[in-house]
Image (cartoon, rainbow, N blue to C red; front, side, top):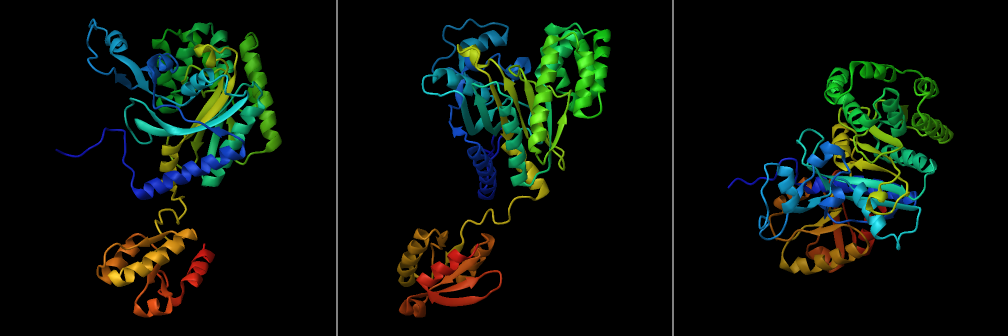
Length: 450
């Protein structure tokens, strides 16, 4: 049998894990500086928790889990697979971390103090078609603030995005829009009931182009006249202030749209006051396909690599209401760790020291020396020095080749002379320089090296 794993999933080599942990740790450190607290939720949720929260297309991408035991017992088979699916599947793998977080807040409402700031770094699953930058199993790194409608929360998320990508060395463009503006556009063209269809289609603009977006909108019931009314929105140009002023004219009859414009004016004013380094744009074609967004929405693209969004999020005003806790507003972002990994790899931006499994390695000359070097290794590890003892008394050439392959910078030798003098010989692998010193001095020397 040929060994394989499902398409859209991956194994990770040790060097890949080191690099992934570098990404996770960078994001985690930034979250902590903004006073977020970590939680975790189960990999699976009740299907009722997940269904209907991600739009029609999102629901199709949910991985459903068959019920335990004889899952077909008592099931009346239907030609509609969706009907049968509801009977044999009660659980599903989580599609994102936001909906489970809303469920978490409601379920633990007595233990959570609002406003609540949480971060969560866990895998999610989507039954999508695998392609570059798109996987069926991938990690999200979420930060959410719930229990406050203040736009200072959106500002802090902008600052977090700026800080994370600055630390990672990735130049990005942050695009911002507001779902209220999109709702206002739908109202203005006489299609308020088509908001989901409009946003779902507009969200594909970068991928399929304006002509195919129009085709999709026509297929979803919009008239040629209504689609023509969208063109001025797509064609808006100028500064943020100029775009918003033009929008005020276009959406003058939409109370919802005017409210969205006011929120964008306030948010961009706050952004201007802190002056982030990343490029920030008001993008009125940005829609974000998820149904639960109600206010500001965010999407981040890398400038120097062609790949999908590497971070996104937005404001949701009543997601917890679905689970019985109404009128609790939240806003959050999610970093796509897997796409960030691909960007850092393509740009060769991972720190060079990542992947060094050990700082030092003791060469093993045999049983007599082994007891001595094991004691030395124990002292070095207690001092916080990553130390490896070669397990077998193999030929020295083989042990040195191993050290080279593992990129271990310092190899330590202990023979009869070193044991009698209670010393260690240290070899710098890059320069070939060797020096013999006591174990205590060896520890101090290695600790002094970066």
